[in-house]
Image 1 (tube, each protein chain N blue to C red):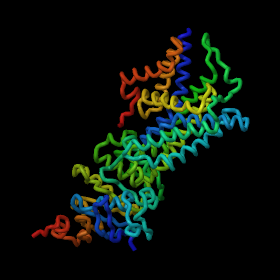
Image 2 (image 1 turned 180 degrees about the horizontal axis):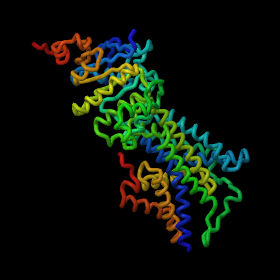
Image 3 (image 1 turned 60 degrees about the horizontal axis):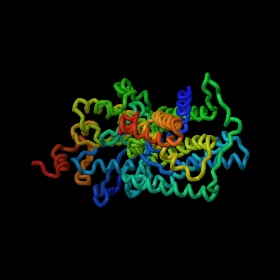
Length: 287
Length: 236
């Protein structure tokens, strides 16, 4: 039964990685922009939630709800004022600029919050669990996973059922022709990054309540996010959930065999998937 | 005063000059055809009007406003829609979504909606859930025209709608133009197919090497004049 338990914990952990990955996939899918500061933006959002919790005494879920529009605005402005200028035929400028942004965010957080590791307290929820037969499921991991599913369902609805989603896809296909339809690519891109930052905020809530975090842990989150996106196949939101689950299960199984293998096992699973399915599990038919 | 006019319009691709002082005019509810060989500057003219190429503001006027320097979304908002050369449907969108996106930037008052476009091109209704790019060339052209109409434009710019299509398909597509005209829209058609252009247009401009070389109504233009203006050689 302990193996079943291990795998189940891995699947739930995969929900957290899917949350890391979904925002990255959204931005990459629409504007082919690889945001190297994605992990640091997750940590930034975690500190924002922490600040709201400690300064205003808010419940972390309320604090995250307050942070959502703030992070949307931040993402919108970041894209509109900075990242839009880096987009073009050359893929290097966005990489350089987001790499620089990553350094700026990390050092800014170090200045503001010191290098101490922090944690957002979720009170009794932290230790609450559900007993299902012989297996006990932590309430927070379960909430994390359900939130990931909810986020992916919501992103798919926006993408495939709304006028904004049509504009996202059209701009991604052909931004000049989209302009002839009255679509302003700069604003579409800004909205997409704003949405991605809302997903980042949800990810940050669960990152910060699950374990300790500090200003320098962003890049490692970026790697998990990347791996989940690539396993899933670029451009598929459900694929990022599958990718997250594969990494999560590999990590918990690895850790169950030997605690030193946790991180390594996730990376090895990623490499194995790449070996067998170089385009990921659910590649988009186009491009 | 004309609804849409260009005054000495010049256009450049980098250092290369594509238009050398083009003057054309389009009246309310009028259909104008621009004909000419490859490289005559016809597409550049439409790309300039639609905002894909930025120009000197005063060189293009629409409804009394200087629109030469506006970007494409601003031009669309004023009521000028374009059916681009090569159809340019969005591959990630279904037929119906390709039509719907046509009204993203402007939902003008008028006759055109999903229903009226399906009435105009019934075959699109049957195939509305398929990807736009799964259709035949002629059907894709119908989607592109429908997409342009969804914003209920005052001016519809059509860039080579017959390009690469079989003559029988071209006839089907041109059969829709009287219905489009009946809604009161003004139309600019770019064509290499002179016969087709003369049939639908109230007036014709002929372009060569970035200049207008001839203009008039189809009835007043002789085949020899058009030949001379089109190829630059005097027919004997």
